[in-house]
Amino acid sequence: MIDINLLRNNIDEVESKLSHRGFKLDKKIFTKFENERKNLQIKVQELQQSRNDLSKKIGIEKSKGNDVSEYMKSVSKTNDLLKEQNDALEAIQISIQEFLLNIPNIAHESVPVGSSEKENEVIKEEGEKKEFSFKVKDHVDLGQKIGLDFDLGSKLSGARFTVIRSNLASLHRALGQFMLDIQTRENGYEECYTPYLVNYESLKGTGQLPKFEEDLFITKKGGSEDSLYLIPTGEVPLTNFVRDCIIDPKELPIKLTALTPCFRSEAGSYGKDTRGMIRQHQFDKVELVQICHPSKSYDVLDEMLGHAELILQKLALPYRVLTLCTGDMGFGAAKTFDIEVWMPSQGCYREISSISNCEDFQARRLKARFKDNDKKNKLIHTLNGSGIAVGRAMVAIIENYQLENGDIKVPDALISYMNGISVIKASD
RNA sequence: GGAGAGCUGGCUGAGUGGUCGAAAGCACUUCCCUGCUAAGGAAGCAUACGGGGUAAACCUGUAUCGAGGGUUCGAAUCCCUCGCUCUCCGCCA
Image (cartoon, rainbow, N blue to C red; front, side, top):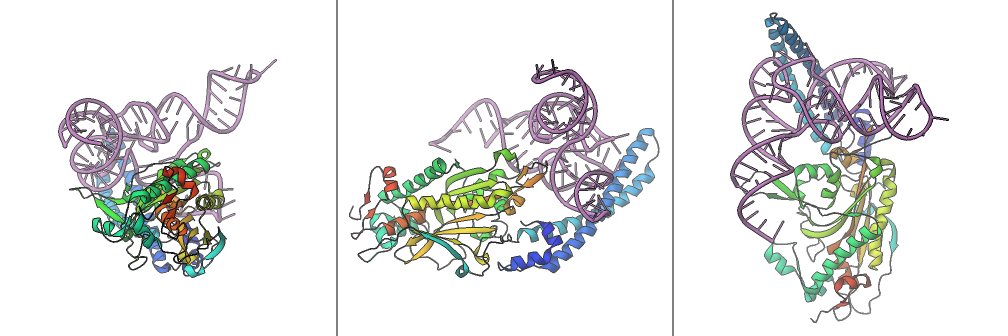
C-alpha cells in the first residue's frame, strides 16, 4: 500500500510514476472520496464530542439528583444524526481503503522505465555455457527416463502437476537441503518452518490479496465457512512474522529463510510453458526474507542478489541477472532483480530467482514498524527473494549436466547430499 | 471431540454502568540530589486518524481495554457471535 499522504499532496507525481508501470490512477474518484471523507469525519467527530459532553453532564447532574430529561432529549437527537453520518463515513472509508489496496507500489528511481519484459536491463552474465558435442535434449525427454513422470502427476491431480521418482527425487530433495544449508550457514539466515496454509490477513499483508485471488488456491475446513489459502510463496508466512509488530531496531535486520512448497493457480498463463515442469501448480522454493531499516534496504537488495547467485555459482550453472523494468515488476516491488538460468535445450535463459525490495509497501499493510531514535514508530522495509526455486534448478541441472547417453551428472556440490551418487543413470 | 478458565498499555496487574485512556508496580526517558556503585526525589512515558499551526514545537478532537455486533443518554464493565490462549479428559502423526 502506498502512503495516502502521497496521494493527498502529490497526486500528479504519483499518477505519472504509476503510469510507468501501466497503472491508471483514477485521480477524480480519489479526490471525490477524500473530500467526502474529510467533511464527514469532521461532522462525525463534532457530533461525538457533543454526545460525550452531554453524557458526561447527565452523569454529573444525575448524581446530584437533578432532572436530566432535557439533556436526554438533546442527546438522542444528536445520536440519530450521528448514526446517519457515521454510516456514511464508514462506507467512504471502506471505499478509500479498497482504492488504496489496489494501487501497486511506486518504482524506485533507478528502475528502467518500460512496458514489457523486453525493456528489462541485463546487468551481467555469469558462468560458462557448456559446449555439447551432441544434440542436447530438453528436460522432458531426459527426465522421462530418470523418474520425471508427467502422466502420473496428471492422473493424480491434473495438468501442471508432476511426480518425481527414484534418484531424481533424491536430487530434488538434495537441492532443497543444499540451498537451505548455504543460506543458513554461509549467508546467515534463520531457518524457519512455517504453515503452508495462511489466512486472509497474511495474504493481504504481503499484497496478494485482495487483488490477486484468482492466482491462489483456496481451501475450506470441512463443514466450515472459514477458508485458508495455500501459500503461493514462502514470502507470505515469513514476511508476516512481523505483522502488527513494533520491532526493536537492535534486532534489525531480521533474516529469515524457509524451504516451502508454493501453490499457484497460474490462472493467467493458459498455454504458457505447458511442456515440462517449468510452470507448475506446486513447486518447492527456498525463500529469503529480510526485514530491515529503511536506510539499508538497497544495500540489502544487492546483498540478497549475491545470496541467490551463490547457489548458481556453487552449482556451476550459467546465469544472467536483470533489472526488471517498471512494466514487468510485481505489484508490491519497488525494484526487482531477476536471475535467469541457462537452458541449453531452449537456447535461452529462464527465470529461476527474483529478488525484490518492497520498501514500506508491505510494511504499511502489515503495520510492521520499528522504534526510531526519535522514539517514533516508523515503517520497516521488507525484501524477499528466492534462494532459489528448487524445481527449476533441477530442470537446469538435468539440461546442463546431461551426457550423450541420457545420464545426468550430479553437480559436485550435491554429491555429498546424494549419498555419494555422482551420476543419475537413464538405463536404471 | 468433551469440560472448564482466561484475553486490559512494553511487561505485571487493578478496575462489574458515569468525571476511566484506564489505579499501582516494573521497565524506559529527562531532570534533581548523592564524589563512583547502590539508594532517593520530580516529571514524562500507548497507538491510529482528524482539525488548527508556513513548518517543527505545540494546541485540540475522535477512536481504540482480543475481534465484530447489540443494549444504553453513557460500556473495559451488561448481552450475543467469533477468534485466540491455558488446564483437564479423549483421539491422533
